[in-house]
Image 1: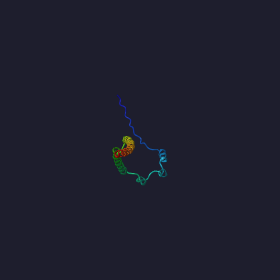
Image 2: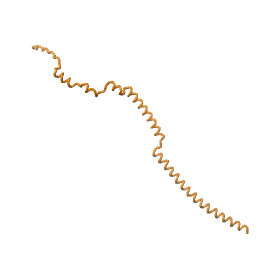
Image 3: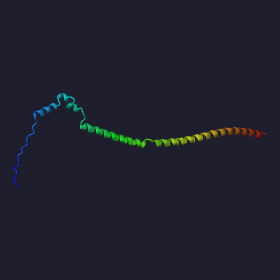
Length: 131
């Protein structure tokens, strides 16, 4: 077997040509282009990580408090079913009161009738006893 001589390869450096460089420079933003971007002073006005953590902690505490309040409201507040039951019982009680009221009127009428009859009988008995 014959040995083939190895070619010595030298890597050419990858240089930028002047034309490529000038095209790239033309694409770079100018100071006027950068005026719309935020400066360091502008960025100081934004919330930091600590500010966001504090805010999220406050929100978490408020949510936890509201959750406790909602749980208490759920336990103590009357539901529509509770109100319906109470109103049904009030209706039932009102019907009984109406029945008793009618009975009172009937009894009052009967008592008035009987009082006049008793008075009439009392006069007759007194008259009969005097004879």
